[in-house]
Image (cartoon, rainbow, N blue to C red; front, side, top):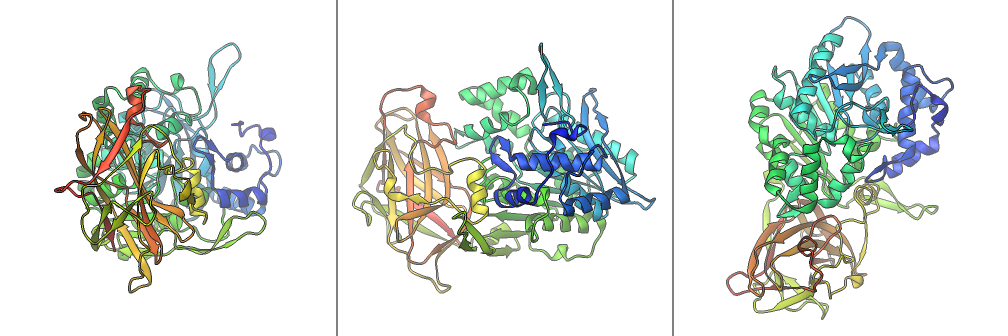
Length: 617
């Protein structure tokens, strides 16, 4: 990233770039921000700090920058942590002596540090907040120097990445000290996205003086351990993406102990140590502290989250007794809020607007109806109305997806329905799904170890971004290679009283009996919605790895899929697919280093009939 004090490398922001970010989000991939989003952030910072020697912003952004400049003093301090590490920061101090609250924003996990959401800081300032944004230690772009060594960018903090550990908690308290000295704030809130959201929760729980009055957590985690390792399956692609997105080489960004943990994680060794490390960094481990401090906490996450899967956030949310809010949206990590925190949009961005309203009530004291909000509000997949753009061929949302408010998560699921896996389905190649009763004695087998057309996503973040903008991935089910997976499909589902086939609401659960020719086996279960043309959309999925199997002997397993809010249309069909491998995850065959062919058999035995428990609401 270029230095904003030398704007010759910063391009002028165009309306076309802003429109692209609005449509495609701020990420080009899981390990790359859209260059337009990075350039826009740099242009804003250069303009705000007076280092831009030429106009760089669109008229709307220029006006916003000038409004904030006229009302505040803007500085770029480097805050010294307890161990001497320097944290890159931005402060916006509003003029006047009137006591005002401050919003502290730890940056997300990005090479561009605190700069990427500069637009959001301006909006917060105009709402009446002082702002202090900072980059957590170790995060940010570093540049190799000829002859060896590195130099840090302006938005980069020193030290090594602690991944939300005790150093980050202490840094958060040091930043609060700086805010109190610099602003003398009336109240203190933390707002974070992704990595910054986990740090926000952890600082709020650990600050020795209990000075955090409210938290907003976008695309967050409740339990880092289960986000990365659950059902004996490692989330390899997520960790690979994160390690590749720090802004510098692994050996510079992480200390030796953390590098050893990463090596263990990748190899699947010493996993008890990895779990303990992740549990220490889990806000859910400190729920008693958060509850005792009664910190109002706002969560905003997605159904198809690939970095921090939804179930662990829901479980954490359920443990909190504080004023709380959980919004669940269509899409993947950062898709709902990314553009709204980065650029002016043509219409309101509910994920961000509701978060700001939460702060306005709990920190500014605004009487804006927030106490009457339901605790949960779920956006239902994929209930938006779209039209096709003739130029791009992509869908454009014309009516937003339905949202369903509930007073608690417990009210999301009102009943369950058991769908039994049966020997025969509508396709002669497949088994069936039926509610009429158990069917036992059959078996279906496949060769393990191959990635198939049945996958959770094409790519981390970007597949979910397309969902958010009205273009969910479609799967041609005739390309599902039955040699490497097993399929069970229902008959067409009849319409209920409301015209919907099934209102799937909550956490599905799957029970299967498995045998393998190997001593371990990975199962990845996917639940699809199949239309009349045999194309499908994914509802949910989840992997499971079984270890210590006796080859050729049965093992019955039950596991939870990720939560879903999904309307299955009348005359559509449910399809359950089980494979042995998905690019997101570790798998037993690869872990064993096996190069032999193994076979997985799914069966249904008399006293443990294979079935899918579908939550309805």
